Image (cartoon, rainbow, N blue to C red; front, side, top):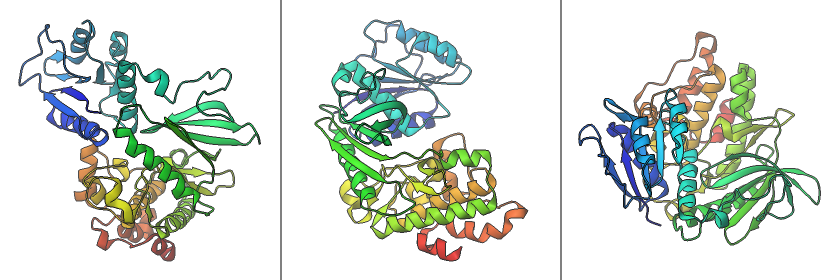
Length: 401
């Protein structure tokens, strides 16, 4: 499906960032960018005609973004408006009622794409037949997934919803990950295939530090994976609570072991981050969410060269710039996680995703505090800018430890 999107904001970098998010998911999208300070504020008679979405930032020179939002939402038959504002103006923006609302300095790619997809679906009046979020949650019955009693929604990813559920036949609690495929949306077909590949990737691995897979179901407009429910929370929460250096080493060893098993199968994870690393009740690690995983030998068949996937805080320099990646990119991401486990801080921060990507490629490797200096050599070997200068495999990480 070809969509037409108009991006309105005075900051060229922000317009480019939104354009990147949109075209990563909808490569054929037709984008028009408008600078309200250079080209002049849009007049009252502007109708937005011909656009499927209006992405409205809050930077308009001397004019307030919420005033522009109010102008647009006051018009009959105006296209859906997605507003990118600040923490300070979010209450006023919500009262005006954009079709979706994001804080411009805290944009998550997955959440953004889900939000835009839902707005498009609602506007096209197909959500009632295609959305994976339909169902009577009061009774726990879902019209698409049979044999499971839904307990609660856990979250969402780029193409899927994630739920805690109970298998009715065994009363086993599981995590259900459900992919929707929108009728008539060619862009979702590749995502559907990658979702099925995710199941095949994980189900074929028997490793104590990789999440267990129980079931796969496929229908016309959805697929689902039932996987192990891990009650201990994710590594992100554990880092926020504070962990010792010895715990960080133990977790690093377990994650490296799981990555080694993954890489032995010719698979790259590509989205390694604390939120994708779960902790069981016995404190063992379980690597989850292979939604971006791909078999290295199929790289050119699955995604177009130059596409950027993953989370900027944990991206290797080569991944952040859309270049070819191999298992050494996962090693870099693991090094970022190790640094964060030791210090409680991410090694690189910036106001924008592109700023973080730039630092991964250009900024010096950060130094650990003196009390942790004996781990600096390992950090250097994992966070080297050039893949050739890093540890070359997850097995080497374990050997070094």
